[in-house]
Length: 200
Image (cartoon, rainbow, N blue to C red; front, side, top):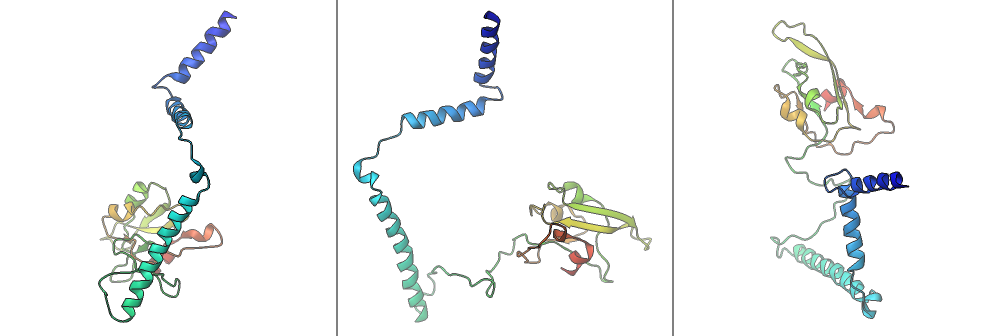
């Protein structure tokens, strides 16, 4: 019985150790218990949820009438400097994109139409999602050491961090196509090869 008690005590010490693996779990449990014990009781009016409902209706109505008023003013050429909320009719009217937005990748070309990439593997190495696969080959031009025989990007895994663009020493890969609607029926179609990437 004494051995069982000692074993149980060691297990509990591990559980309550402030620097142990259970520390964050124990802290979350303590916070939840504190919130439950210190929660304020709602009064009768608050239990009906009428004040919260009225607050939500007021906020929605405020935005609605503000936008409606300024859209009517804009029709008559008044207060053009004050913007009102606009709903973009996508996909007929796409939303304007920021210049620094990272969108689908593309491979840049040289003047002769060949791919600018020299298969240095910098983008493949730095990619945190491991979605770039490059197969290098010897370039027929003696001034260029290598070129990518295969260059594949799995857009199903890509996190659009832009590290590949920053790491490329040849400016061979960019994320400036402004194409966001990337959807396919199979995972295999999400893998873009060199030809698709060069087409932009």
